[in-house]
Amino acid sequence: MLKFSLKALALATLFSPALAQDLESEQGQLGYAIGYEFGSETSQWEVDIEAVVAAIRDANAGRDPQVAPETMQQVLAAFNEQVREERMEQFQRLAEENKVRADEFLAENESKNGIVTLSSGVQYRVIEEGEGNRPSPSDTVTVHYRGSKIDGREFDSSFRTGQPLVFQIDSVLEGWQEVLPLMREGAYWQVFLPPEMAFGVRGDPPQIGPNEALKFEIELVQIGAPEEAAQQGGPSN
Image (tube, rainbow, N blue to C red):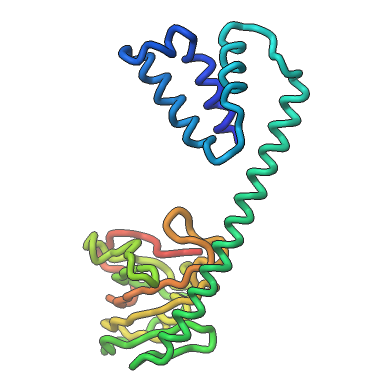
């Protein structure tokens, strides 16, 4: 909650009784903007705004605090712990909800035409077979890919940028490590990853939440790196 403390400090520095009424000057507008953002962030908590204003005025005037510093530290520590616990609970709820959605999606998807399900839960559909060799798990490969949520929202695409990815297979997501050695050069597959074969319970904030199943379109351009390979890397966990 350092952000909370810094915002309060900024308010104490910028806001005086005179400036509070001056919303035409740049300094007054800046102070109001900080105060408004601060108020928006604290609206979810039971905060006594009058006490906040009194504290700002005391600090701005250089007066001694009306609450003992030790008490303020204790109250803030308890508040920070409460916020931490609430955020953890929210995260756990989201992780559980996403896992249910992922399981339901994969169970339904499994029955669709052309879907192959591996023992790990990874699913794929072959769009184009490809005619080249298959890479080994330690090979470097060049691929194009598109990643999306199970609701269809795209979160990344090398097709969009026109720059293929170059990476070593054993350095990326477990689901990719499983399917890429099954593909031939020139192959184009749709791949569906359960959370544990993608980013897991941690997710990949801010784009990927906890326990999200993901969809990928993967084109294995070639084994090895082209002479002018663009992006290095690949989705890693």
